[in-house]
Length: 182
Image (cartoon, rainbow, N blue to C red):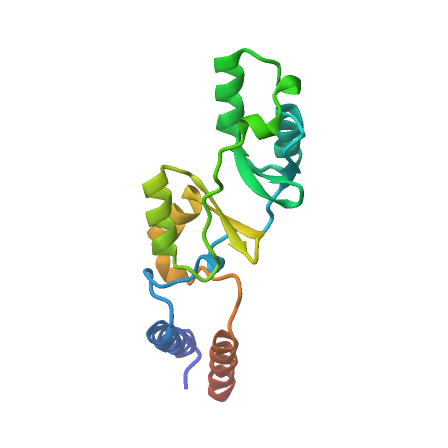
């Protein structure tokens, strides 16, 4: 085999493995579970805290929303937009706005095993941009409108952050084939 042909053969092998892995992919765009695209770093505060506390936490953590809890249970959610609209509309200082007053309720959520398509449906139905992912009464993640937009524009990436055993086997087989060529 000539040296110039090696890159071409490597590309052909990788293309074959990618096609095979796409065919074997158990998740299509409509059936991929939400847990594959959700953000896992979710921030929460107690309902007795203030909008100032929420705003400072959002800035510190670099997030757009905070889950509100009451007595250890899910209560609602507050977003940056909620804070801005409340401050402008009510003309009350952030330190005087209690989260139990501002929180969007009831908390609309989805479980991690429901599909991305179901998440999109729920977000459209309720006109929301942040959808908490809840399992056993605990928030385990968050899906945003941005996550859905990225997923729908690039579903072929195989967005899932949790690599399956099948993915690892495909990579190992690909490496073996490349070694055999050498």
